[in-house]
Image (cartoon, rainbow over the protein chains, first blue to last red):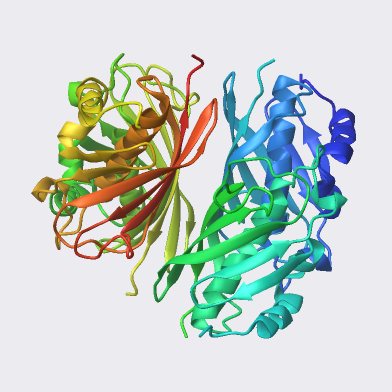
Length: 140
Length: 140
Length: 140
Length: 140
C-alpha cells in the first residue's frame, strides 16, 4: 500500500508544488509501484501546431517523481530533485499528457525514478518523452 | 552579431513559447556568444522556504537555449529540443533567477547548449543549477 | 527480422569497436526488438570488492545501443553516439554483466535507446544501472 | 592545496580503478580547483578513422571526477559515481585526449562535477565532449 494517499499528496502539492496548479497537473493514481499524473493542457501549455511544450512535460515528470517517492517513503516534504534527464521522442498532438512514474531504485539517501510521458492518442507504447530523475532523501 | 534581435525573439516567443509568459520569463540579452534570460519569480514559482521550483528553472533553460540557437542560425522556429539534463546544485533564495546560455557546439543538424542558472544573491560563481541540452535543427 | 546478424555485427565490431574486445564484450542476441550484450568481467573490469567498474557498463551500453540501432537500420557504420546518460543503481557482485537494449524511438535522423544493465545474481528486475543514449543517423 | 597528491591518487587508482590502466589514463595535474587527466590513445582506443572511442572518454571523465572529488574531500575511496551524462561534440583526430574536471558543487552528501574533454589539436575552446557527473560521498 502506498505510504501516502492521493488526498495527502494533493494537500502537500498545494503548499509545496504551486507549479502543479500553474500547469494544471492532477493525480490519477498513486500506488506503491507506480504513480500516474496528468497535465490538462490548454493553449498556455502548447506550442504552435498543438504540441505540448517541453517544460510542461518536465514539470509533470518532476511532480510524478515526487509522488512515487513519497508513496514509498511517506510524507517527507524535503525530498528534493538533484537531477533530471529528459529525452523528447515524439510530438504529441493536442490534448492531455500523462506521466507514469516508477522507481528504478529506492536507497536510503537516493531514489532514482523513471517516467514515461504519453498521450491517449499514441498510447504508452509510443511515449512522447522518457525521463529519469534522482531525488535526495534527507536523513530521518 | 546575433542572427535575431531581442524583439524578434520576443515576438516568436509569444507564438511559440507561451510557457515563457506563464513563467514570467524575459530576455535580458541575446548575443551570438551568449544569451541571458530571467524568470521573474513570484509565489507561484516558489517552493516553501522561498526556493524557486525546479520546473521554472527547466523552462527558463529551455527558453534560453532556444534563444542562443536562434541567435546563431536565425529565425528557424522549428528547431526543437531533443534532450535536456539538469543538475540542481544549490537552493536559491527568493528572487529572480537567471540563465546564461552558451553553445558547446553548433553543427548542421544538432546544437548542444550549456546553461548556468544563478541568482544575484549567490552570483554566477555559485550557480543554483547546471543544464545541458540538445536542439535538432531542421534541414534548410 | 533484424537488419543485421550477430556475425555481421561481430565483424563490424572488430573494425569499429575495438573497445568491445578490450572489455570482453560479446553479443548474446540481436533482434529487431532488443539486443543483449554481455561483458565478461575479469579482475581488470572490477573495483575492489568485486564490483564492476562504471566505465565497463558505459562501454557495454554503448555497444548494445549500436547493436539495436543497426538491427533496425542495417549496416550503417557511421551512426554515432551523440549523448549518453547513465544512472548507477546497485553494486553488482563479481561476475558478468548484461545490457538489454531497446529503442525508445527510431527517427530518420535520431534513434533514442534505453538499456538495463543487470547481472544473473540480481536479475533484470533489480538492474545495476539504467542507461539512455542517442545515436545520430547519417543521411542515406 | 589539494587534499591528495598525484602519487596518492595513482596508488589508489592501482587498487580502485584498474580501468585507468586498461585505458592508459594518467594524471597530469590534481589541484583543489581542477584536475587534468590524459588518455594515451593507441589503436585499441580508436574507432576507424582515428577517432577516439566514446567509452574511453567516459572512463577518462569518470577517473577525472574521482580525482577532483578526492582532491577536495581527501582519501575517501568509497565515494561512488551515481550518474554521468556525456555529450559528444566533435570527432577528435588521432592522439591523446584530456579531461579537465572541476566541481560545480561540493555538498556533504553529493559532489557534482563538470568535465571538458579536449585534444591538443583542437584545444579546450573546441572540446570534443562535455560531461557532468555526480559522486555520492559516504558519511564520515
